[in-house]
Image 1 (tube, helix red, strand yellow):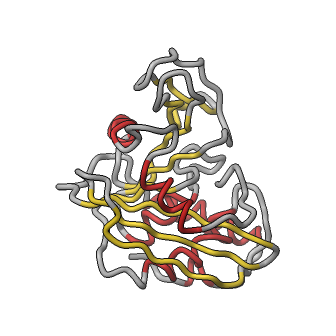
Image 2: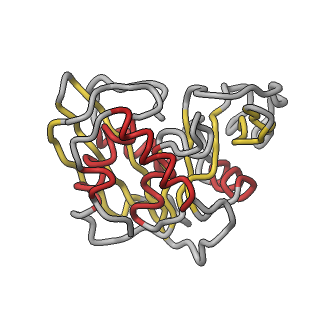
Length: 225
């Protein structure tokens, strides 16, 4: 686990970018997962300078909620596109500290490697917690892709600056894609399979749906980074 000073200090946006550039070298995009019995989902909602963060742990086989924890606290970092992990990660780590069940795999409502500096919030949480993590964003942050076919399970590579950084994934027939990328200790192919598996009925996978429900209806930022 990386020292908390990388997420809790009152850093400037310039310093935050320096931290991202340093920590991205710790990200692994190779599978190192082990047996997955539980899957965690995280989400956060923000109103003014107050946030409600949620961490939910689901049984990987039944998708039933095993545990849910929330926190409400102020956010100390301004809204800066590409630096949202510095705004949100401290809140989510407080919720993680309340968990009794540590998930085997984490799915984050936000970006992972599909980020301008290849270090979105899924990477940040994965490295800090040393957990296999996947980013699953609802909106596109960077990159371009060819629209995949309309059936569930179809996907196409998401490329940015000549590099495949993620995938546009169709989780249900004839619905909009979600944007999947490695967070930490998970390959893109494995991340894509897990997102499809965790979304048996709806566009959004069940861990994120459950976390969104727990985080409540406060205003949320749509393109989390």
